[in-house]
Length: 319
Image (tube, rainbow, N blue to C red; front, side, top):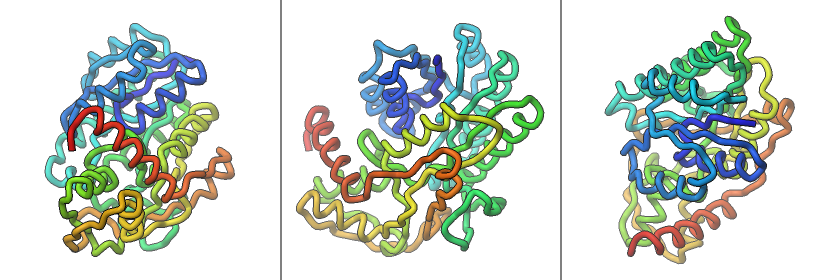
């Protein structure tokens, strides 16, 4: 197949591109390489497969630039992973979230309509569950009370997908990712920040006194779920892609300490605005429809990340 991957230079996107290439698909990447975090990491991800893909440095909110790409290629399916990420950052810069996550997604759906495409798999987020107190979070739960603008934009994407499915017969699968981690991960996320801090003997801020719980989900498991969705997308649906086992942040930190043989200096902090104390994935629907189950436990996942981090930083930087 010929697949357009938006956000293909991102953490999840680059892993998806690699998996698609390995099985013989043709891939076109759109990514604006923005400076939300160091673009060098994005360039290094793309470097792994730069001669095997067609790459466009384009922002998805730029309709005319996007249309040019659709005019140049005939796609079989769209894997839409581009987004402005970050719950906390959305409180500081709300307009970019509307521009990228809402307008950008609308552009893609409109271009699909114009060019006769039907199949899209897109990234949603566990953040759409907001402050729901019922756990684990199931796709049948009400998700009309987001507590961050980022979460609200992801819910808008799901509503847009439903509308285009209803009006134009699009096949749309939305994937609610739960705390994805692993090699090539984002520097603004806990595992990257904590590993860097410990190796540099710096203290870390531990929110909610480390009592937060997350369905940490390893990148290879996420990629498997995305590929399954691309291969089977039919109708309109949303799925949780997350570990059915929650991990407390304090244990997550202990695993990093064990791998590195060092102990953190911790600044214990209250829960931050926009954050939720627990995310917990109910994957029954995902299992039933896609046959997906995560395979990598937190201990192995952290070990794999730290091995990558040491190798990557040893090549690119001096600690």
